[in-house]
Image 1 (cartoon, rainbow, N blue to C red):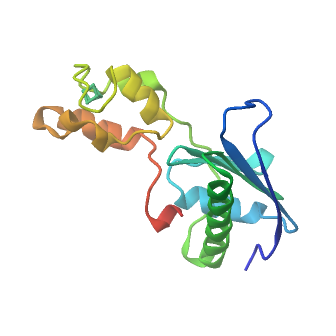
Image 2: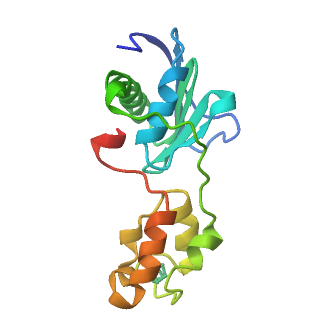
Length: 181
Ligand code: SF4
């Protein structure tokens, strides 16, 4: 096991007082830099900064950050949720480290697509079936993993098959399965 113990801190980010969103931070006693390329290879949508020994990932609207001696989660609704999410992240790091022989590490830095790049590939009918007022609003949320491609029903129609294929290769979506924690 890579991370066996850590100091936990739960707080409301000072840049957003009163917002009732919580963050949690784990201060580690081990350097987890070596696991970052393996996380980068397995977490769809992760952004790895090799020079800074840091990796960020969006998961179901939460922001996760992995540093050499620190893990952090933010944008959680309550303290318990923040603590539980942090435990999940610690488990993810440990599982990935244990599986590293099966994973080809990835040292590249991927960029998130812009909302405009996504918008250009959407049906652009503003039909609101995704629950958003406009296709651009949907694109903005898709760009930060707050929406999924399947939330836009028209994309399943045959006439949009080419755009959908292009979006699938472009868009970063956080997985909801155990592959990504
Ligand atoms: S469901 Fe798709 S086409 Fe309709 S508004 Fe949302 S993004 Fe646009």
